[in-house]
Image (cartoon, rainbow, N blue to C red; front, side, top):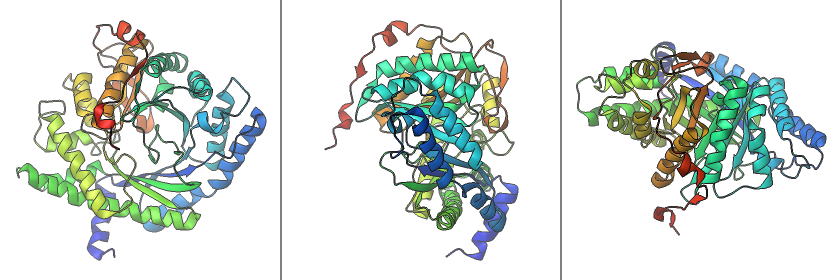
Length: 449
């Protein structure tokens, strides 16, 4: 039962500390939408999404108004298109992206995820067609997000896919002036119930339709930590855990209410500290509140590990339906503190890579010089995939080589995507390594049976 004190605390967190429901995401299976003819397949996809998600935005707005809880985004995720449309007799998958975009606009969601492929152990013909379509698909659509899973702890890393995705990121940047790359994620150990974009898709093990909610509250955690300044780190961890508990309870309430009103099963609450460019809504500020002069300083990885673990502990205490990614995100362009540290040279890509060993995702929303080679991008993807594979966790890469930009420049992506300094990349070439291709075998810790 929710008590009066919890209600008052929640009101304070919403009004003063940037607490919100970052997204209510409806997952929709498209496994029954296949058809040999492109037009018929697109029609079935459009009809199903618009039928299932017809009331999503209105329901979110009603809950927001009635409960006084901000719901920033309403989104849809679908079965990976490489799977759903593989039976279609076409070489061009761009029409499927256009259909997703049209459906997203019809139902009013801000993003739709699932222009995706799962290639951790190899390619099907549908996978190759989808990846080939990604650059154009992201250039000609507004709301479509794309993801490709290139590795897993159980399968190892598909280095042919890694090399291909480096070239795909590079081409996407070239034909969209970098903007398309903000909607493209390369994963290792991708999860099937992630409600956050750009990496959301509706996994093949998921039900016909489901509601997943993503909650975010860096400002709430930061505010709570101010009240225990100077206390030992175990005390700070306990404060974070209790704060995460309260935030998750709010997410559970919204998820259950949305599920009831839409007549769709409740899937998970993803408790991820997802920052925004707004002042006071920063994961970097939390790390600095713990005693670091700047995020990126020695000690940053340890502080982030404690934060991530405490958030997860608080979440699982509050709900039996915690899932998705749940932890702390470190997107550079979307976090005012990260932007500040990166611009000052105190936060480097190498330090960010170390931080990804203990955070929820990986190298996220990092702007690179426009002349960064496809092989270097592939090698960055391979490094992150290796961290995920060995540590049995999700890692991801969302980097943006911005044409015409170099180190010291800034790029503005707008809205929640924020702005970022162009960060330097190690100039040593990994081209021969990436050119070898093949597969990095699964590690010994994959042998769980």
